Image 1 (cartoon, rainbow, N blue to C red):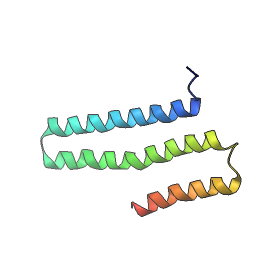
Image 2 (cartoon, rainbow, N blue to C red):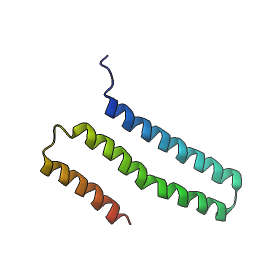
Image 3 (cartoon, rainbow, N blue to C red):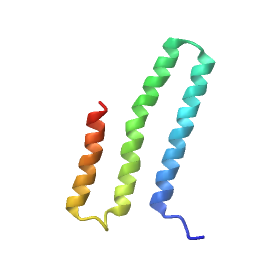
Image 4 (cartoon, helix red, strand yellow):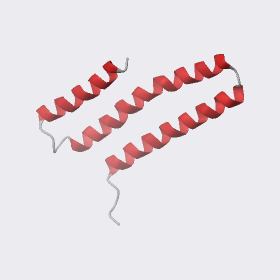
Length: 88
């Protein structure tokens, strides 16, 4: 089997850590068993989501940087910005 691309490895690792945080948050909500606490945990997880999106996309774009023209790179960055803007 071919060796895993370091950018793909980094992106997958960030997503695995993000999913571990989500699972931990869900278990914490169950343990605390209070709506107020669950809303606080959910708010923290909601803040982490866009940060993981930005970090993972940044790593992916770094991996593509030498293959993408500056115009296509700008379009990719604009796409990420639009996603964040639209979900605000």
